Picture 1 (spheres, rainbow, N blue to C red):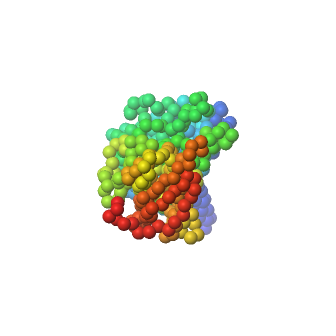
Picture 2 (cartoon, rainbow, N blue to C red):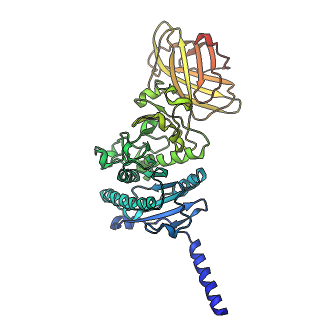
Picture 3 (cartoon, rainbow, N blue to C red):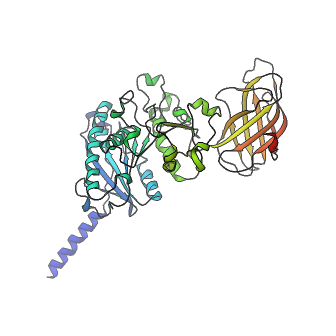
Length: 457
């Protein structure tokens, strides 16, 4: 009897050890990419009870995984094309940030065997099979009491369109799809049935970071999809030329992937809640930079939408294919601080030029430049500009401002400012004002702001 008891104890210990082993994302390399891989979809389950230890989930026997609680929300993370076969380096952070936000099931969809190939069209053809695999799983979840409306699919690149294919299978009843720079090659120009579109979920939000075309992209197109695909589509920095990414091929592999991957890192940054990126719905990036889209009253008491995980709060205020813009810093924290600068001049002649402005609080300085195009200043006509600072300073004590014609071949003009008003677009702080300032071309003037005379504005 003692021997049987000991054997049972040992077998139990082995099973316990196995249960504690972590399943990991498939790690391949360039060799696999060259010879090609056969599609296999592995689902890695993470919960608050196992934040860092994934367990492979059976597609058919959900009850075999007691940690998988069908009554809780479920978020799928679906990666894209993996030409080198390496695991995505952002998977761990994204999984953990999601579990910090909410008690849920996080399913990392590992289809690296199928995404790892030098032949991109093969990976594209595999997206339909991945979608069928996930559809079967979700049908099983639904049979066991799961709710389609509690499902959130976060798709990166090709993963965005996989999410769309799954959503279409359920007639758009899935709760939410988030598309992080949805793939462009072989999807651009396709009908809505052949790619992600707003009807694929109850709410679809997207971010576009790599929609440009460069001299190298004549051979290798931009990885991102240009047109809107959701209820709201964010275009940071206009959707291209992301700050901090290499501008030439001398930047090595980062030149080809930095802008495409920036969508993931911007989304991750938004989840940390160190600061927020307020976006402004607008018809074009130039109109946004020109300060023509700063009215946020249309979007209820919470104002213009904030990019990131919490965008679902704006669902009732948005119509499909709302395009929203914001700018970012080169690195985390990526969010900038938005002000509106109102200037009235009293020069007799119309002047054109650029404004550079800095804020000081005694120990720190932050800068902004209106340099996307020259501003036009006319006598007694208020000119409203959007100025965006790299960080948010509290208790601004001094303001420095410089006017530049941007043309050294002409006579140096003087901009006679009748009144200047700087308004924070996030906080409810009182605007900062100054009156009667003379700005000589390319000469910075520093002053202390004073309370605004509201009757003058």
